[in-house]
Length: 186
Figure 1 (cartoon, rainbow, N blue to C red):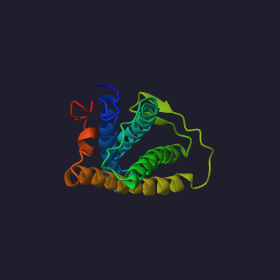
Figure 2: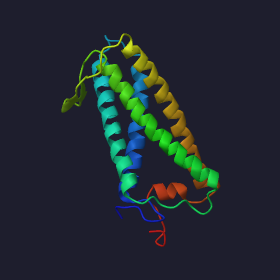
Figure 3: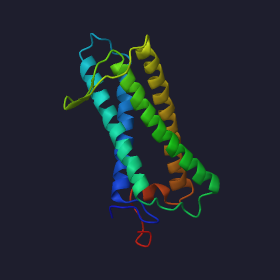
């Protein structure tokens, strides 16, 4: 089942969700590692190139994921979910996607503050077209840092809610996002 049904997530939604989750966790860990690197470290150039490239990939996948969410129906909330839980889930998803876009733009601003292009694994480059502003790189770096940590906190909250629904409420929320649905749900 490629598309979502009324009660279950399809293969495309599930794949995008988990790929984004893995990439974002990897980006956070790599970014955290990079904070201690100096220009003289042997890993510096490789770490930054991979971080920028994966950041571009996450941004592009976020656009695909948003488009997919607009294209296909979204499974209905489970009957056991309270109205505030449904609202909270929607708000958290909107904030997460907004933060992904803002993190990408702030990362782009860091790299392109001097007019430099941002390369995607040396396959193509996004030109640095931002106007020159004094301290833009520093300001964008701070914004990037705080957005990344804020997003990490929100992802942890999202994970905790999914685990609570799966193991305490036993309502199958996590199973649905793994694409595991009973035959009557498909």
